[in-house]
Image (cartoon, rainbow, N blue to C red):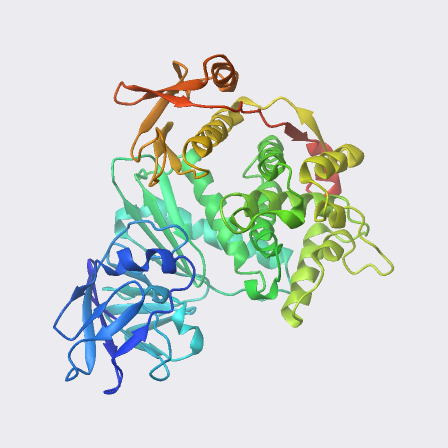
Length: 521
């Protein structure tokens, strides 16, 4: 893999003479998106082809198959990008290129005019990696040299501006310091930070992923940080740095693994935000209340053990339910250790043996002759819509409350998802951009079409102060359809047979939680 320019990689496969075809490994969603991703690869000569499943040699005289791979910031769901532009270089994830060992052991070689960074190390001009996990590895290839001094290895696109770059470095250093002190027995896996900025005329947003390289792309970001952009950066960076203190995800087994991994990072980030006072207790309470409420409402009539795979492994549920489980489990712990000490002990055990019981670790920690009471029930066979409210009432950690205005848009988003599910044979695909609901890539709908931009429901703006679900429900019951106004001035009537029910919101007792979780300084 060679960096030709900040806009182009050259990828070459050196094959044994007798090897004519090798399957791509296509881990995760690459099985779904591999074809479209590799359709952008440009063959440099007439030696071979690459499609969704297979690398093929078409000229037996060739010993290598070479491609130019253009840099692209196109998003594919749960696929780490193979050639993401970073300003003065490219972020490349080897999973996009990885092939099987059908024709022999596979090794990786990298070259660039400047630095090459992966696996917490920085190399200059050239590097190689032959271990098995090279098939799923993030690599940063740059035109310039970066240092590998103590702390986080970092590259910031100069287009970010000095203030944003300094803020990111400061946030990173603060996160490392907090987690080192809170989790003293856990080894920190030093990441590489790579950040860039892009202006595309859309909403203020970011896209990133973690791993050995913490990649962060800021879209339409201001040159000078604001309280709003500062908060969003802190939330993202502190969450991702928390992962660097966790045991490898493979240590977690079974259905609860995504909730333990993402929920653990969310718990550490949420706790840090309160303890360092970069959010107020009121703001932290709203976030936790929202997570608990969304977790219960999205689960519907499912028990924890019966949650479908799409809920377990994707979307917001691993984050929201995971945060709720950690906070509430530690809130009813039966020993005298601090919550952070209990997390420290849990991760330490996971690092030294294959598994331990999450419920036992949260409620009992290292206390002997202790049996967890609540978490086995919350994670059991009872419907979450029944057992979770029972738990909240019994422990008095939260109580039913009207949804706050900050949740109106989210509830309207849930209502649209319900409407779309009915209209699109159970499928849902849309995103929010500047208070507009934009229909994503989807087929088989009776009314909805990709690219539609919805701004109104029953004649009222979805981004306004009103909760419009009652109007939607009344329209369904009275005339069997809901009127949605589009950004281009048109309106569509979407048939509906079932009325959307506003989910119950639960407000946490933050004073009680702050005492139980040792959040007072």
